[in-house]
Length: 346
Image (tube, rainbow, N blue to C red; front, side, top):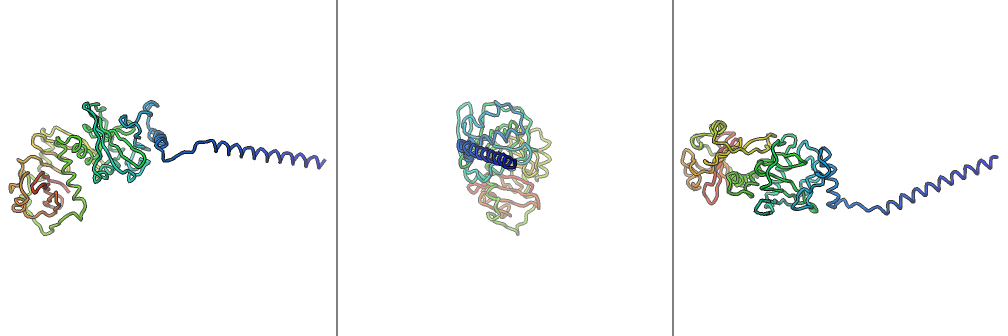
């Protein structure tokens, strides 16, 4: 009786071993037949994007499958993981992996593309990545199709495209529009609409970028100026601020997301008189405006030094005169003459 019981147990054990071996062999065969995943391929990135980008969206399946850029069908949409917080914290790729940026402009007259200069690539990326999606939402009508712009971010083996509207200064991300930063609107005007007055802000911003490295400054700490001599049209920054905010001439308004203040701000423009106001700076582009000592656009650098003295801060493209601890008169220099001027706060 005991030997019969022992034989039954042995038989059961052998059956379990055989079943286990069969299971292992089946898993091995199934694994060999499966196609390996290449995590570097655009197809894999695209699939990952569709999963992440629309995790918070109520888009239909047809909309999900639309290409990010119909003119470059292989481009991918920027893979956001949420519609809250800074863009650079919501994307699955690293900002530093982007090697260059290019712009595609499509109008009724045709298409043109250009690559941005290498020195401006980091500026565009930083302006894009620093947008706070929670703050920068733009509730505006969809723009017309008369001019379509795509900003394309080129990584090593994939390109990401973002639809951008220059008239409203907004990106389209995940079916929602967001205001772009100040650097973006002036840069895009400079390269896409060089004849506009906003493009002059782009020129000045490019000059400003050269002064952001303290090592580029030539400082004159001993310089002292009379505040009245640094007014423009007999007004300082605060007086211009009060005038512009209550003046109906400034009817052209462009909104932008302020990275520094984390809120939406407005550029006010007096096209006729060549004055632009950003909230922190008043820019002058018309030769008729002048300082108390007669320095105006077109004045030579010799005249500037003769009448105002040596600037307190100086680069090859911008001379700065410090009015007080928080205010400056800036003169933008080109070919040894004043090209533009501004009064600024900080």
